Every structure is written in C-alpha cells, then in structure tokens.
Length: 318
Image (cartoon, rainbow, N blue to C red; front, side):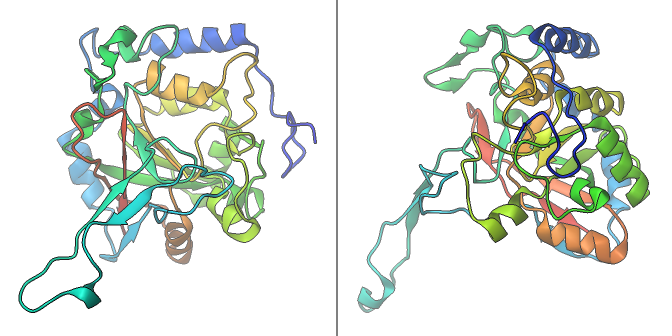
C-alpha cells in the first residue's frame, strides 16, 4: 500500500519536503514568546486561572487512568520490555514475625509500548535543544537542563480528547495514516468542543485498540500519527501538552529526510511535553457515554532530576 494515502479514507496525506519542513520549524520557533532563558516551554500557558477553571470539568467524581499496563514480555513493538524482579523470597516462604515483599523494576523509558512523557531535553535537532540550548548540556549523566524535573510539580489542566477514528467512522487508523489539521477540526466539530490555551490535548488514533484486537506489530516501522502540518493548528491554539495513544508521530515519516518530525516540531520548536503510547479506551467510553469530551487531567512524572523523560500514569478526572 502506498503510505502517502490514508488507508482509512483514501485521502492523500500530503508529503512534505525537508525544505518545507525546515521552513515550518523556523516559523513555529519564531512564535516562542518567553525569552531566551525560558526552560518551561508550553507549560507557561498553564496559569493558576487555567488550573482553577479545569476543576470545573469534574462532574462525576470518576477517575480514569490513561496509562497502559507495563508489560514484561517481549513483543514485536517491545523487544526490550521492562524487567520486574522480586527482591525477596515468595510470601509462602516467610517465617514467623515480620517480613516484607519487595521488588524492583527497570525499563526503557522511550520505547514503543510503555506509556511515557518526553522531557524537553529528549529531542535534539541540528545540535540544539528547545529554545536554542546547546545539546552538550545532555551528558552521560542525563539532561543538565530541560529535564523532566521541569514538570516535577505535575502538569495539571483541562484535558481534551479528540477521537479521530470516531469522527472518521472507523475503529482505528491504520499504520502509516496521518492525522491532519482537518481531522482535528472535524473531531472538534463532531464532539462540540474547542481546544484552547493551556489545554492538554489527547489525540486518539486507535493504536491501542488495534494492538489489542490484531496483536502487536513493529510500530517503529509503521504507525498512525499526526501530520507535521497539523502542529500549526495546535500552536495557534496555544496548547500546553500533547498526548497520543501511539507515538504522536506517524511512520513512515511524511517528511523526506526527517524522522519524527512531530517530535521535532512539538518538543524542540514549541516546547511541548509529549506523552506517548497512552491508553484511551476507558476514557473514550466514558466521554462517549456522557457526550462530554473534556476533563481535569493530572500528569505526574517521576522526580528524575536529569531524566530525558519518565514513565507516567496520567489521570483523567471526570
């Protein structure tokens, strides 16, 4: 199948030359408004007023996890899964008196299966990090600046779920498909919601549902995601963070010579924290049942002072 077509609809996903991409990159970088010393990026859009307003989205008092369960067995999209080990003997071997069950976990934060959030030091483009910071601030010890600890106090605001497959009338987007700005606008229209300043925008492509029903595949080679041109709309709306149930980037890339163009534009140019490989199934069902697609969203990364990202369990409060 020609990956420049939408398998779900047959509409063309316009390819972008490297020259066109770089022009878009410079255009979006030029919109930064916080000065050369800024390290928070789009989190600056979330002020106390936005957090207080987001509390008003709570109607049911129901909490929903947006994270997928951490997996420990190798799969086609997760050849190096997290390792979970017990540090103590099984409980059946415990003797009299007090004992403790203890375990440990090790994981690849930026894999293609586990839910995680990318720090602003995660994406290096042309030797630079977000806001032109030199890439050599990332060393063998981690990110000296722009680490995930910038979000250590949490990312809290109004969450907005845009269900693109629902709007298109399909269960999921096929690998290689691209979500366009028109797709985002159509989802807004169908769900009667409008993305605005300070929002945590969750774009569903159906990656997790396809994986559950069809089985894992090599998501590094083929996956649905945003078309890079769609970042202009999200920049115009001044969103604070971007989340997806896939990688956010489609594969193969729509840009000749540039892999992960959405990561480059979002993290490096706009200073957006990206949340990859979330799980929207329960959230989608809850929002559809009430026909209400906004919620209070709480994202709490681990306190990793030099981390380039973090495992994450975002919570939607409906």
